[in-house]
Length: 290
Image (cartoon, rainbow, N blue to C red; front, top):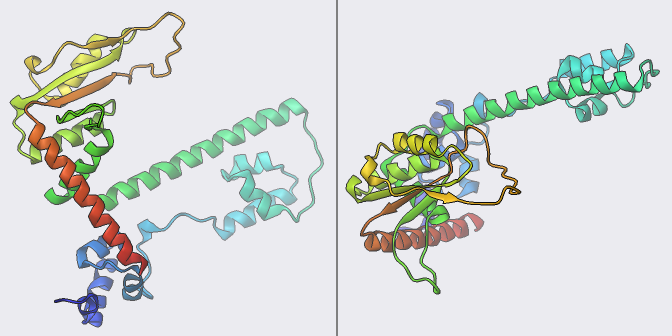
């Protein structure tokens, strides 16, 4: 029988591998998965003293930015003007210059409001750039998916968004409904991984009657690559003229229903796979706690 301690018997050898992977730019999560290190304390010891890759570091306000904010404040600029000049949040500016004297008001209320709006627009642009940078770095961290990783992602995706048998409605069939085309694409990739034959798939669109129904039907057909015979009749959501729809615009294409024919056995396996994931997650969490 292998004990947990035996797993880390060659600690120095394991540390060399961990450091090498860190210097290649791998994240802690990927190093953990690559070396099968389940204990966070052990992982911390393996990477002790080894700096994180540059892409994992969040941007911080630089000292020269703080110094520039203080310089502008001493010149008599308001928070709005400093925000417009530097693209920093007012909260950061306030912390940096709160000890400096407050400048004398030289503008009307209207001028100050206009300047504040411009400063807020600059802040929104900065935040959007930060958001895009974080998203890009996170996407790069994923890399490629192994078949097992796609398998586990698909099980979780189905159990979150797919239909499930209920005590009051005991039905065992795999049906998936979503409006996000990326979710649909990942789900279809998962079905292909499971060798579900394309001829066993049926689709139909759910959409508001006031939307561009024909465009939505063409969009989902192109996304799935399915033949017209695989699509059932589109279901229209009817409502009164007083209905205030929020999901409008060119990007609104309703929802797509993906149904697998003769899927009772597949549904039962999905249910079992999910139980297995839950059990494994609980065991892993318990190990991390001890």
